[in-house]
Length: 399
Ligand SMILES: Cc1ncc(COP(=O)(O)O)c(C=O)c1O
Ligand SMILES: [Zn+2]
Image 1 (tube, rainbow, N blue to C red):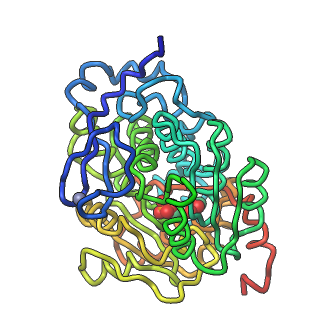
Image 2 (spheres, protein in one colour; image 1 turned 90 degrees about the vertical axis):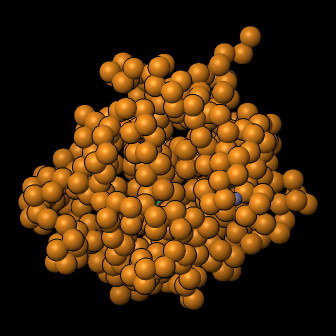
């Protein structure tokens, strides 16, 4: 008989109109209001079956939090060993920039080299559980690579759409995993439109960021891990590079769940979202005090994962930033690339340009008095720089 996971997943709930949907239903957005759905859990049950102190003995992947993840049968878990990434003290970077308690959560060590692996492990496992055979995704690069790898492992087909200026390694990687890749003369939002238009005819399940309820479940495990690795005391500040926003949204959800589980108290880190000057819809909306962001015209940044002109979960990103007394800041492409170099030279971590933005943000936030030198600060190094070699080698692009 198939072995159950002890997941306490009970239903899906709309993040806006709060309508409830059965967990068995294969859904994208809320059927009533077309906004993102969240998985909800029987927290009381989870509380009684997971002993926080026993987590120590569990597997060193994100599946250590299985009761708070949506997959119901062990055989449907599609894993490449994602999660449980190191949290390292960034002593030399801290000394250079004047911070005494600076840490890196190094997501570049995930399978396929970015935090996107977590989301895809959860989403592709759910797709497998529901019998989905064909997956489609618009991507800035990393999500495509992760989709292709996890669908390969699951025996599903992947159709990946990426802007034609996406670094070449992402296309090669996807193809090596057997995915069908189409490069589009346009932005990630144009890729998203193509997926929407063709999905019905082609029989694809669309796993675009937050248009599918489970990627965010995988990403929330960054929040669980951070708490566990910090002995259940969250830091003062989290700095996260933001495109579609699932990283921030997922961690914020994790903190709420963990408080209900009795694992942490009510203290929250200030969530700081970093975007690029050439594409900063969240920063603009944050500064203007509005709930939804306006799409950016002609967005331009070398950090392809931040070149997201419009995000379906914009209101959720803004809510987490505001509820946490955080900020949204933008940095230039020059500064984020310099951030990569500084990080490399001081900490031996070769980061993606998006992650370099977190280093660039530090100086700006300090200057504005938004963070203090002796606060406990965690930078999320969301991905590896290795697939972006064309960005780093093209002097024309950098200048
Ligand atoms: C390395 C890296 N960091 C950050 C992001 C932004 O993530 P999100 O779209 O979840 O905000 C991306 C997205 O592609 C990425 O590849
Ligand atoms: Zn709704």
